[in-house]
Every structure is written in structure tokens, then in C-alpha cells.
Length: 125
Image (cartoon, rainbow, N blue to C red; front, top):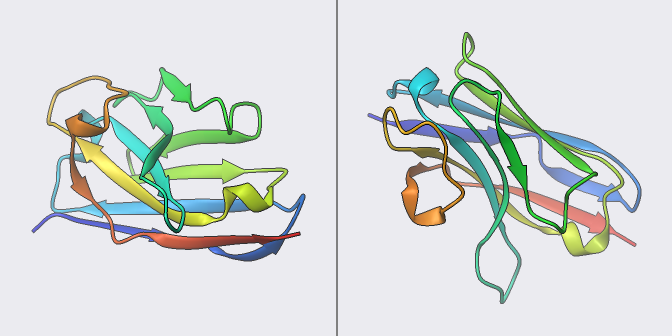
């Protein structure tokens, strides 16, 4: 059974930092691209960041570029999202997702097959 479990969300103030984690089980983690997405109330889910299965290729949405860093530890089956200089507009439920097996990298949401339940990030002004 595939499980992706996000953690690290919370209530923070503008300018603070958070590190989200996503632990994967039941899936061959090291051969799958991983992505972080978010969904704010009343809005569609949007992409945040992507990382290739080897970790050497990353991509960021323009809204978070320069403030966020995606990384992974294949030995721990975990992907991370370091978020700095948080803004109220970053408030959303953050989801991690795993891509198809042996697909090196993708920035397309539809290429991500497995999803976590999400972790809430709330940034107060």
C-alpha cells in the first residue's frame, strides 16, 4: 500500500520559515520524481516545486522561486520543502506527490500518481 505522509506544517508569521517533509512507503521512492503542490481555500491546486528521482534537477513555481528549496533523501524515502520568507499568500494545504516509476522528472501535475493527505500551512500577517 502506497503512503505519502506530509508533516511540518503549522501556523507561522510573515517572514518565518518552515520545513515540510514527506515520507513515502510502499513505493519505489528512488526511481520516482517527486513534487510539492498546494491548494488555498477557493482556489485550484497549483504546483510548488519538483525534483527528479536522482535529485539533480529541480523546478519551482515563480511564486516561490528564491524562497523555497526542494530536496530529497532517497535513503530515507523522504522529500523536503524548505520554505523561507513566508507570506500570507503562501497559506494553503501542501501536498506531496510521487510520479510514475522510472520517469525521471516531470512538471505536469497529471504525471503524479500518488498523493499525500496534505499538511496545513498558515501564515499570519
